[in-house]
Image 1 (cartoon, rainbow over the protein chains, first blue to last red):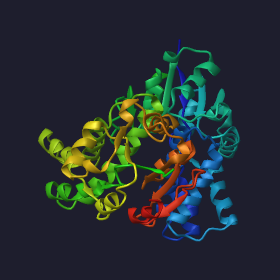
Image 2: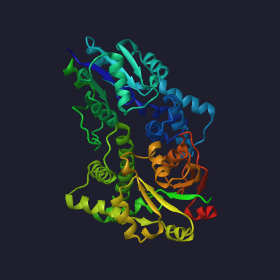
Image 3: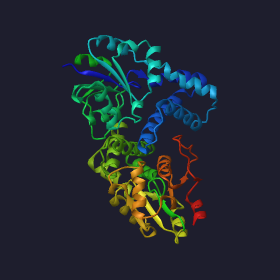
Image 4: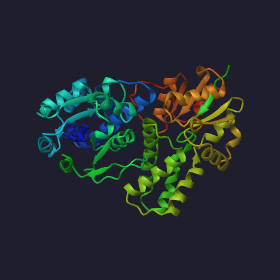
Length: 218
Length: 218
């Protein structure tokens, strides 16, 4: 039986740093700093809320992380600006190879598995015309828990009704790869920027420089 | 009844960035970068291991975070150098006011509560002559869980046999303050560098620029 391709979204199919352009327009010469800290805090807040047992959804976390970023970097922030910046998350850019790879995998089952809410992901996929390429969308919001807890990856096997060993999980986030492999998925780490793997006791099964190399599993 | 003063260690009583000097001697002009990334990864690895349910103790996490840091920053690393750097954690510098504040709180119950192992903390306290100032030392290593999970803060009330509302918890780490307050402790955030509080739904009860302001609770 063929593997099921389960994709993370943010940083894997879509470039979270593509918000930089709009940040830069709004706050000249701050685009890079804002986009970096925003993403860093977004992840950190999802981890911390999970650890404390204080779930709020990823849309709210994304807003909180942005607000913190503006306060920390001391840039002027209005309701209108915040709204406009948060809406950039509906228009993130897919990576250059994303569409071609999804097209080439047409005979394979392709699933999205994300920390994002269904509402966030549906908008993002529609705006990039990628919504037709996926068989299923699974959001952790269904169980109000965040990756990389084992119960999140368990949601995938529960929803897909396949054994965990049938899943090839694809992410550019080292902690997501670690969580997925820790649960028993096969894992492909998309390492676009020649990063060093985090030393948290778990190594990916495959390391690819972009999504194209996934095609050998088709 | 007086409050029990429960102190976090790393970043609160002792300056984790005091490793910078030795990093700088070993790797000229890299001391700042190494000490920053080392601490960042140390925290991140404790969060991620807790989320995945893959506990290893804080000494090993500190070593892993350092090794990652050296690999990421592309500095030459030998067993001997690693050993020497990790040993700096036994000789972190207390903040300038730490000793005076502990002395002034002589009639109050003072407890240490840390992610560090008993071995790490005992060495650190002895090397700085602070071991005589504390009534108890509590390490999360006892339950193999990391802060800021509620079960960690629960260990404190279990060990001290006092109600959670009797505890004044002191930390310079925003996530530790959030976790402690989330559990029901009163909290004092030591904000030495005019940082912005993280937006994770919880505000400290008190915000102080250093430990000295704690004396009003004596």
